[in-house]
Amino acid sequence: MKTYIAFNVLVCVLFASALTSCFVFHRKPSAYHTAFNYIAALNKNTPLVVIDTTVNLSIFSFFNELNETWHLKRQALVMKADSLDKAHNKHGNKIKGLENLGKPTINNGRVLYFSALMDTLLVAEIIPIKNHSIPSLGVQVDLSYRSQAFFNSSTKYLFVFDRNRRLKRVYQQKMLYN
Image 1 (cartoon, rainbow, N blue to C red):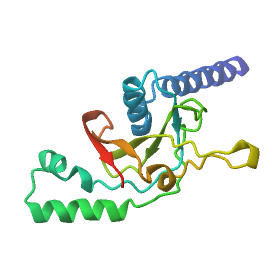
Image 2 (cartoon, one colour):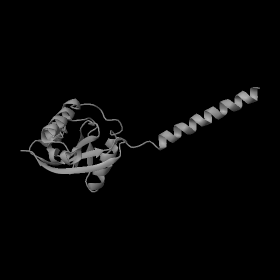
Image 3 (cartoon, rainbow, N blue to C red):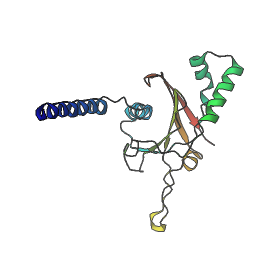
Image 4 (cartoon, one colour):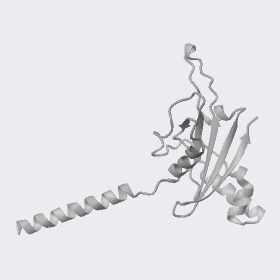
């Protein structure tokens, strides 16, 4: 009887271990990792500093592209985009798994910001780093979105996912902040 119980316990432990390893190794990448991999592939020779905290990146600059995706009348499109923007205006939230992505350099690099995930939409923006550090005075580079976007240019991406978090479409725009 003891052997039978020990055998059953061993089978349960092995089954649970196998099940756990299946989930660990076959986990779908998050929308943030998918977006990072896409942008990193486009910027192979440029160091990226990834900000692992969400910022408020509006989807309104992609108004025409959203119309292609949603096929709504103008007023309904404005209402839907506005409600998504307001509902997901969560800046300052940590994004799990992004803290070790990118290269921790600020020389000739770019900084990558992400919005909060808005249902099936994710906005990312990559900005050339403005290096305003003065090491002799102890002044460090300010990587805040506001500081880096001020009088700078950027590339903004809208990632459209399906309900299973598979990438369906990517839109890209050049931005100029004056």
